[in-house]
Length: 399
Image (cartoon, rainbow, N blue to C red):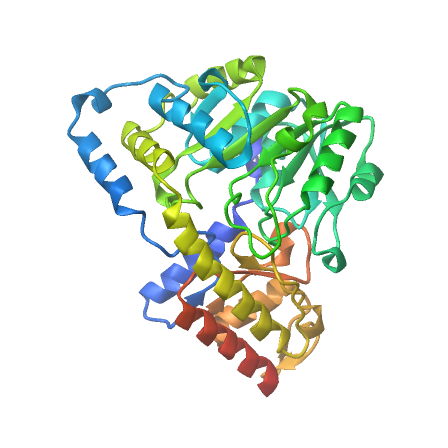
């Protein structure tokens, strides 16, 4: 029997993180005491001045009509100013495309640059969407394994071992989802020089740029590695910085010819993004960063608590994350052990067991290219964070 869907979409995997979050929310709605570590979104409200800007925009008839595909000029100007302020990246409004969130920016960038047969290097653990987006663009995703011994920070040597004559692009993200790894500025520069030497484009996902802790420091590769010239694309958005995941505003920045093609693609797929959300994003980017400072303080505290509690569990080890709002513990020490008369032989099986038995939702490492790990978001309330980890500790101790 022939498939009722296209071969392309028939081969596309669903988002594992969204699937876990949806299952946890369904169980919670049914009255189950579920604590979810699955969602990658701040547990804070969008700042009031941003919401007020959106409310005001709802009453302005100019927002009821189509606007330029590339985005409102005011927002593109704000993105240019924000990029210079926060990372030192010099660009122009004509090099900016406003997208329906960061995920849309990533798939648009890949559709713009990747040809069938191209290989795209993706350091692992990676965000679950990256390889699927490469697949949709007709390319081949090539995972580049990193090590928790090095805090999951990818190195030039690891990238070079994975490079072939078909390698055309590197997807680079720091701070990283799911590991929280932050690559040192000097190493970001070295990776950029390596890419330039081999004529490899770099897609830089900078969505977590403001969520760095301790001595860690964010660095934008096009800024610290000018050798790249214009062979880079930067994607970003308001979701993580301003607690605006549901507003769906991201952007893509790149060379003029690349951006012309990206705008053409978007003109045939989505047209312009919601004007109301764009007006809210203008208010966000033109305001100060007090909201992110408040969230970062909470996330900093939570990452330390979560790391400590995870490392206290027999069979679990966790590198302290330097960025984003996730912990990525190694749980191979729990596999094959008996818990309540049951055994799990993979992190995916163990994640299912935990949701069924102690009602905590985590995303297994299989979704991120590294089986044997869990991703746990620390973007939830302190009380729930601690209670869920206490459940896990008691579950393991009871055997």
